[in-house]
Image (cartoon, rainbow, N blue to C red):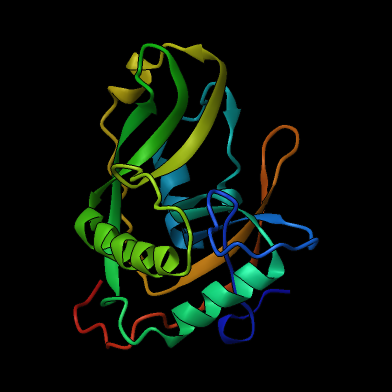
Length: 212
């Protein structure tokens, strides 16, 4: 069962530079925004019924804010404590999903994703604030992930998905972003499995005054 954010904590193997030697087992962790059940249902109802490749199960959908990589408990605890002590990570906001894309491109796609039509600027501001916190703790600076997106399917070998991404997709139900989750990733078949281990709600110290 996920514990309250204030009683747990987090960190990274992509580059923790504090120079601490430990024999504690590391876990693949990342910070993400959960996609709620009503939004998942709206996405499922709008997407094409059949997607190619290894399709990500809807209950695993999320928006990654910061990948942390191999993280030992002491690192994890230091990061969550720092996030919990932060007075302001910005206001709650809403995201609206829309538009399909591919990585690295639609002709030889390895990943097909659903993009964000509204809220990308606010998402970027949140990610920048969190990046400042994790780098101050000794993590290697992260590589910007570009436009926030929700991974729909992974393609191996790469495939041409130009027809797929040319479809006009707009998700009517907005996503209220008022919390960030700490997730564990375990690699497996047919794809990685994610489990929530901590959450902070509400993350922001402000009242959301605008209606969703």
